[in-house]
Length: 244
Image 1 (cartoon, rainbow, N blue to C red):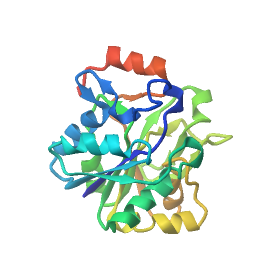
Image 2 (image 1 turned 90 degrees about the horizontal axis):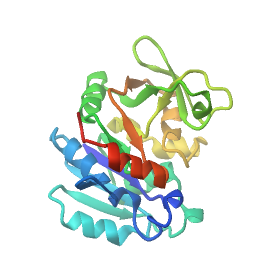
Image 3 (image 1 turned 90 degrees about the vertical axis):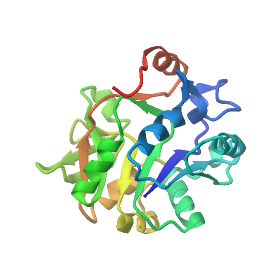
Image 4 (image 1 turned 135 degrees about the vertical axis):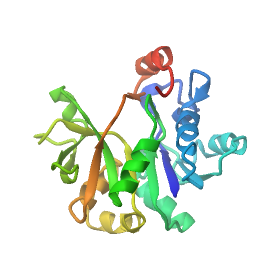
C-alpha cells in the first residue's frame, strides 16, 4: 500500500511562519506534523512507500527532511510556485499517480493535521469493508457545515451522498481529509476529473466516486487538530499530547 501525503499548499493564513517554510514540517511538541502522522501509520507495517506531494517552492525542504527519515519517502514536485497557480488536491493526486505509475491501494491524507487517535484503525476498517473509505465526525455548528465536505450514510456506513461546501447541508456528518482508495478506485482519479468532479478540495473525487461504487464512512474515533492559522497552531502546540 502507498500513502499519498497532500503537502502542496502554501498555508497563506499562517504567514509569516510559513512564507518560506512548509506547514507540514512545523513542529508540534518534539516532532514535525508529518512525523506524527508517518510514525503512527508505519506502526501497522502495511505502507511500503510514503509519497509527499509538494509544490516547487518547498520541494527541496521536504527532500532534506525525507533524507533523514527511516521510512521510504518519495517527494513529488508538482511544479507550481505560487498559491494562485496551485493544481488543487485532486489534480495533485493524479499528478503523483501518473508521475510514479502507481497501481496499488492508497491511503491519501492531508499533511497538515495532527490526530489524537491512530490512523491504523481506519486502515483496518477499509480493509474490512474491502472498499474505498473515508472518515466522518459529527459537527453541531451549522456555519461550519457550509465549509466542509458533508456526507449522508445508510445503516452500514455506505455513503448515500457527499457534497463539498454545500449551500444546504443534508446531514451533520463532516469529512476530514483522510481517505482510503482501493486499487481499482485509485485508477479512476483521471476518470473522475474528466467527468467534472471538483479538483481543489481533496474530498471531491470521493464525492464523485461514491456515486459510481460503494464507498464507506467510518466514524472518527478521536479528535483532529486542524492547523489553519497562527492561533490554532499555538493552541495545538499547547494542548497536543500525542495519540491517546
